Structures are given as C-alpha cells and as structure tokens.
Amino acid sequence: MTKAAPIRHDALPPPTRRGLHRDESAAYVGVSPNTFDRMVADGLMPKPMQVYGRKLWDVRKLDQSFDALLADGESAQANQWD
Image (cartoon, rainbow, N blue to C red; front, side):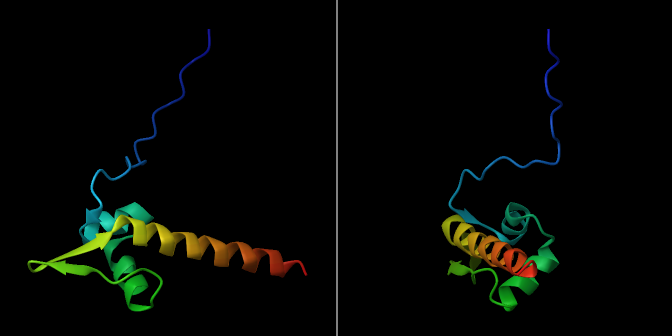
C-alpha cells in the first residue's frame, strides 16, 4: 500500500471570482503586496479597474501578464547558452 502525498499548505486554491483585490492579486501571482505594487508600477502586471471606489484586478489579465513574464524568462534562459 502506498502512502498519500503530503498536503501542501502553502498552495492556494484557484480564485473563484474573476475580480481580485490587491492582496488576493499579489498572492495569486506569488508575491507580496508591496512587490505586486512595484510590478504594477513597472508595467509587469496590469493596472486595476475601479468599481465603485474599489480597485479590482481581472484574473484573466493577471494570467496574461504572468504568462508574458514566463515567456521573457524562458527566452532569457535560452540565450544564456548561445
């Protein structure tokens, strides 16, 4: 009989809402809220939309921005060995 894999307590479940507030958005991409703010200011993450005075980030836009980071990182790694 095999043992069950240990549960990872640091893993977050996927969001169940499309709009996330700042702390949720930061956790979703795996960084602190302050780092997330810097990433937004540097254009690495999207700017929020304003809904009745509340700032929300669209999960789909976060995914697109995160995918772009991975693509940039992958190409940079490939160029190191050229």
